[in-house]
Length: 274
Image (cartoon, rainbow, N blue to C red; front, side, top):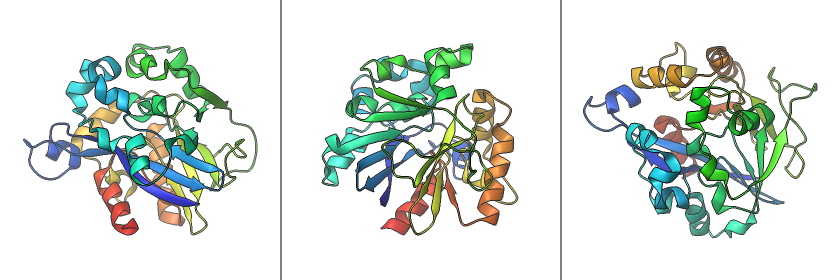
């Protein structure tokens, strides 16, 4: 399969120094929605959808005032998945499957642009969004983004062969066997990473398991703004142990690990892929 690394939404939160770990304290930061387009023999697969056309048309209604003030997304129509796929020469109707790392609003906004796609989600995450238990969960999920009635496909973890020591969901109906779901709980109750065997080496889209490239480097480091943000929105205590496991995975294997919002990682992939 061919793997494309695409940005389906730019943010400009304050401040560059606190978020990106460099630059001015008073200039806006820069974050992305790093998503994947997988071109397979059975059609197109998206890993996360970033912001969609309806988010751009009704940001307050779809995303909420607090999110808009905190994250300051650009919401450019040309950055949406449906626009970028069209620009690449694809028919958006050829998106057969969408795999979600989790159901936060900046990962699910584009669902409504692909109403015929099957939407794959990990069971604990699906239940967290549909039946939120806490004030944080009630605030973070936006049911308006799935009021169109997505074709949900809910997956549960079962005993089986592990992936580099991580539990995983294999043999997902309709998807190539090279695509696996890897639970990375913490940021949300059912957060996962998505592993892809490209044929030239394995990738792991780690979603929001971490948000700053320095967290998986040795010694680890996180910008102060993102360290505070991640702590505030952490749901389970497994988050930091899972980041440590990702750091070790990156150090001891040829798996290429990257996250959903880090600008440095995304620009690195853009340079490699031309």
